[in-house]
Length: 256
View 1 (tube, rainbow, N blue to C red):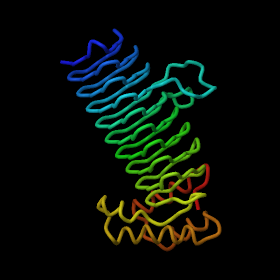
View 2: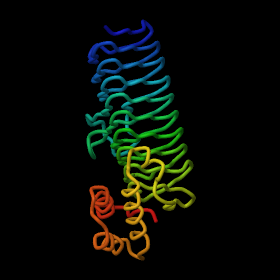
View 3: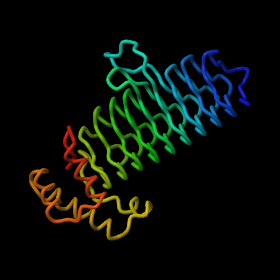
View 4: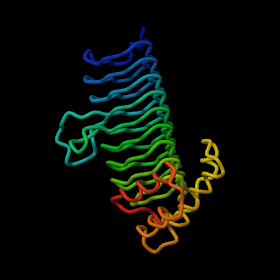
């Protein structure tokens, strides 16, 4: 049974699962789906197009599935899909998609800290941490297990690889390949995310292999030549193949 505050508004066409808690001054629009065991604290706004899973906790002032801040948006029917077990803190805003992809997507087990923004058509994986006041422009992709510190500014269309750590206050307009730390201004490769990889159970041998891959990648004047050196000199494990595939598929180029 849902616990809905008499001071909340839930549109009659909204679809709610069971055991949700909806606090005072919440607003849930039509064409929305809310799963089970979610907690919406006071003053949460769920706009049309939201598709929210189970066991999420959403804090005061959050506004989800908002109209995109994109002048190309013409009112098309799009969605904002949110998975399970997410913590969405105060004043977080997430826009729904546009005709470009049709949806903005957030996976499961993520922590979105206070005042951060996810723009239209972004894809955020699972087990991601995004710090206070970080802003994602449109169509940014973030792979699983990445960490973005506070006040990071991400250019539209950028891709951030898995297991990355990004220093607070960074801003960038190129892709960030997996397993590394980036920081300073302008942002630079600062080494392999040693602590993060160990926390996720990577062996010392595998971490050394990843480190050698980046040594070869960045020691060449041309990134493509670095990739060829990796292919010729290193064992191609799934982790190394991930690096190769990421770099070769990058449309904006990778940070150096």
